[in-house]
Image 1 (cartoon, rainbow, N blue to C red):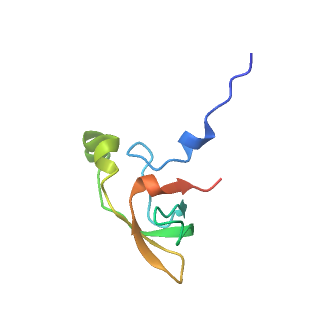
Image 2 (cartoon, rainbow, N blue to C red):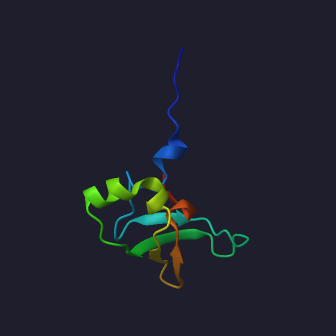
Length: 85
């Protein structure tokens, strides 16, 4: 029996695997995919490991990340982002 890992969950941006400044992420625009694409994280809230653990995924899902692709700048929630790969 072969077990397959869930690659989708490893690509999620969560409190256990938060976005970091300079990281390149795929943005999935909830507004009819108008701005879908690859963006660099240009702003993240500064949270310690203890703070991340305390707020958990439900709290982390409410933070706003600043992103840029050089031409466009936007703000996104972690659930709108996926790691590349």
